Length: 258
Image 1 (cartoon, rainbow, N blue to C red):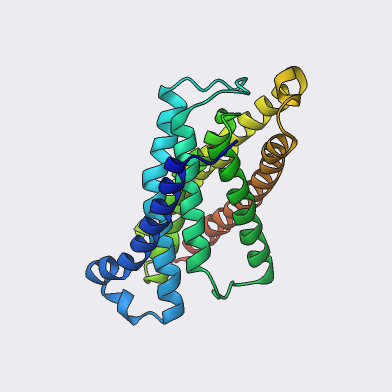
Image 2: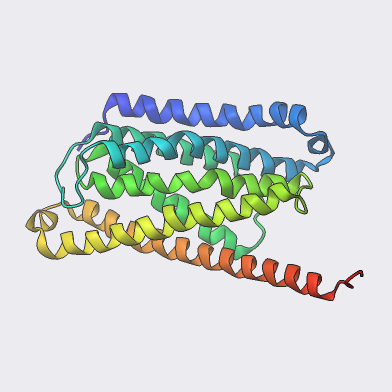
């Protein structure tokens, strides 16, 4: 299938928009927070990139959930054209391209982080191309974009930490919101979608008639995204338990005044 001219324009415009948001971040955060100016160039880059991702999630996440709740996208729909989902695919493609541009030469914390994020970006680019080009499996493409609703809390946490608010109540409440939205958007919803995908693979003859690279896209996407989401969620749970344990230990060790 051809990548429509309109969707090419959407992807290019999306890329340009999120690059502009990345540049605008320094202006907004300098105005909002005095500690931003004292950050190193590397830390400002982290904050600006997180600001861009959070703003994108605020826009794309609700749009994908609107498509899920308010439009007809049945899980068993194999060949089905949903223009809104194809639009979201092109939109997400632009954001991933912007992400790749701003992270050129960016030093990752570890080799593991580098591999995980590059794998995520590669699969995302491939899946968005398939989602935008083929009127097929829109339910499963849209589930990927529904995950973006967890991004604002995830990246706001990075921003708060870098700006020196790690010990504030905002950081604590953000952590609670992050765990809930991540659990719903990236664990619960994707698990349901994976169960439905397996049913489609087993019982829908139309799935076997999909082009090989399209069917592989959704199978590979489910494997990669589920693995990454479960891994990241396990880290969240581990850190949350550690945080609660430290707070409880601190409270029990404090002397009781009479």
